[in-house]
Image (cartoon, rainbow, N blue to C red; front, side, top):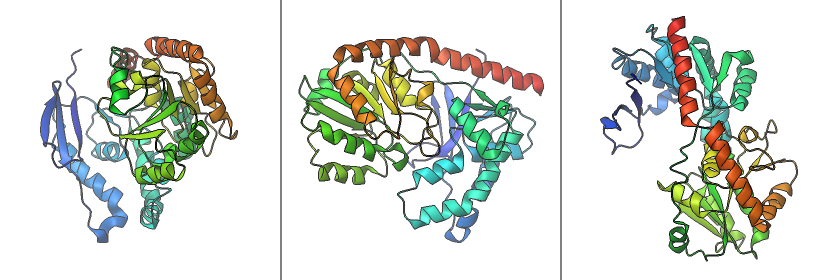
Length: 369
């Protein structure tokens, strides 16, 4: 298309090279910035200053900058490079940090509290200084507008796509069943995602307790700081044989194809890409509705309630279990919902449409500049 992308990012793993090419795209990594303890109170500003120097080394002959993270966007805009910049926030940054550290100790909570004014200043400046601010959902646009007191038209919604070929091209479900000793006729309920407090997986495990005597298996694919606590909860509920912690996997598409139902119990999601992946694999999905302030999710923008799955009211304690039992008991409904969900992905959530929208916004940035 005449575009030459380059990615600047953090070297989150010491084993990764500083520079490499991935499918012809240049990846340039900066080191993780360790901040001395005596300077931790000013960490957000110090990190932004480091990123400024890193960005400045690599922006020669760059025509457009797209930032997904507030520190990068703030650093880039502060350099006054006269290069159009687009900011694509995944969430309200401080709110995500706050929700994801709810089960953490006092230290993370203390620093999140102290950093809040700085982080809020950084992200609000990103929104003001960027040429375009793009979100993946109406939900995030609404949250950003409300949190920072911006007009809703400040934000442009451009939902992501999903790779239909990757999540629907083959089915080796029996291999997954053999790997985890799951009987051929047992119904598999699947969760894919990070194991952190805002994902609400503990609630899912407790809800699953009532299916202990049913021929149903819950597979939990992913890793995160809550894993040990969730494994202990599973043990306490005597559900070890019915709940399997798979850990992180690069072949996650195989688990979607092996499953019968997908569940996402999250309290906080900027979009919910895993729902799209499950729908692309032909699975009916169950997730919670957006009910502020506790449930900040975009599931109703993806799942067509009663058609491709169910969006559950979190104030109804039993509804999640009821909808899950309904899908367990009705294989014909599961299959029909899955077929429709895959069609929705093919028409409404394509990467072609997402890229086309992004290119239009890029051209708009250039014409304005």
